[in-house]
Length: 133
Image (cartoon, rainbow, N blue to C red):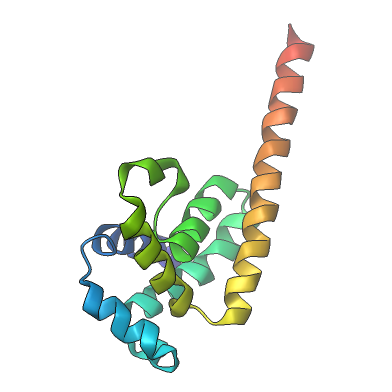
């Protein structure tokens, strides 16, 4: 429970601070990706990464998808139209540096699988509703 609570806090901090983070701070880390483990943003991204498995095992795929989108894109895709495209490109480049390539690849795999599980759950719910009618 504690790590999941910490994960929600880290996700909200990242979602709040990423749009207002100064470009020179982002470009400093983009230019020096080997220093990613020294940044607070990367630490929070790895905390979120550790929480995702817990939510998936408990069947909370929507929460896992939100956390994966946060660490991969820097925003939730359902809220993507609110921000400017140029700001999202810089943040997206910055988010790619926060996780190692191996973890980022696994995160994309998990994102696809979790979205697949969400679709399957919604289909099962709709089948149950039609059977009960």
